[in-house]
Amino acid sequence: MNLNTKSILTFIFTLYASLSFCQRTLQLESTLLEEREIAIDLDVPWEIAWGPDDHIWLTERSGSMKRINPSTGNTTTILDYKSKVTNIGESGMLGFCFHPDFENNKLIFVAYDSGPDIFNLIKTISTFEWNGTNLENETKLLENIPTSTAHSGCRMIISNDNKLLFTLGDAFIFDAPQDINSVLGKIHRFNLDGSIPDDNPIIGSSIYSFGHRNSQGLAYGPNGILYSSEHGDIASDELNIIEANRNYGWPNVEGVCNTSSELSFCSQYNVMEPIREWTPCVAVNDLIFYNHDAIPEWKGKMLMAVLGGFIKDPSLSVISFNETGREVTMIAEYFKDYERLRDICINPHTGSIYFATNGPFYPSFGPNRIIEYYNPDFETSMNRPISSLDQFVNISPNPVLLSEIISIEISDSFIGNELELFSMNGTKIKSLDINDNIIILETQNLEVGSYFIKATSLKGIITKKIIVN
Image (cartoon, rainbow, N blue to C red):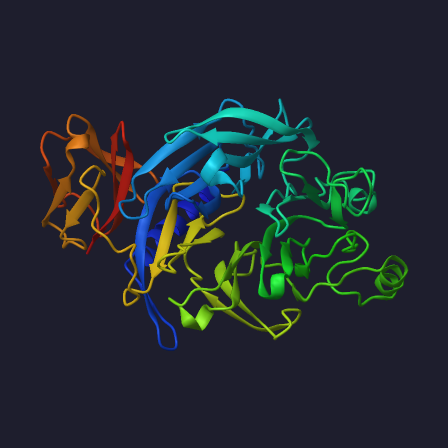
């Protein structure tokens, strides 16, 4: 990268920081949603999910899994595989999902990439056991799955019949998706112990559907229908309904069948066409079905994270269906200036949504954030006081006027450590010793804009945004 290019990128990131990092609300038809920053300084979060323990769990592409208390933002690393995971381009630690009997067996499925170089990457899918503090006791279910630095797929869910489904991209081997002897360009179906179900479409094969380029969203929606979002090339990002043993066309078909060669191929090979396509590509990603009363305007609709393409803003897309769930009737887009939106999860108690950002540029870089949007008028049992055992950091005033002082209240667990101040692009500005429960931060030497503080202890990390006006 030459100096001029670097200067341009720095300017753009500064513009994001000055325009995008302020407290926000979203007014829907009858519901006002408010924003809350949950965590900052994450390293390209790829999958986020609401855990059975009422915490947010996430993978970072660099090779970590973390767990976040949504009430306090306290963040702990529960699996550090950075020495084992290869994070080049789009590869790394990617999809995960909870075992359906997690309450009893404490197991979680995790997928990650490893290998010595870009030409020898493999994907592993393992189970880990949650001991209440960390993930341990790895059991490798599936090993030596070929993969690449891009087109890796790797979204994972548990099916309605308790099977493990996961997507695998074509890894730039373009004839693989139509080859039933190749695992690439497929959606796979396994028993929860890693064995192949007897009722799979092809006896002895894990292949559930084929002809995929790079699917990175899987979710059940209306009427128990399984949907997938799929990255196109330059044209034809897709939203598909997934059915067993169906061909989805790639690379012979992009989007719907509408050229002479595509029509011939589709007729001969019974291709399943998408129910929606986007041209040029918008970089569709995770899907999750919203079925909560807290945001009535979104109830019964599919939420989709959109990374954004070269000429398309990132967004959270809200997709409406007809009564059968097999036709898209409307798409509304929100949160277009939050950088690349990678993934979404939902608080089942409050109906709040959380989304993970991945920086403004491909292939993504940190520091990244988890943002919550919630309905403050929705009453729930989750609105309870924070336990005195939890860590906390409180800031007042915030926003603050330039040259005023900020009072930072901090829990006992941080005393003896340092409080660090960063710019929103991750540049460290200063550090302060934590010797008391109140820290005074002076702002006279700062510029107008947004910053974040970071406090670290053995119990975890809390990050908080500060706005200087």
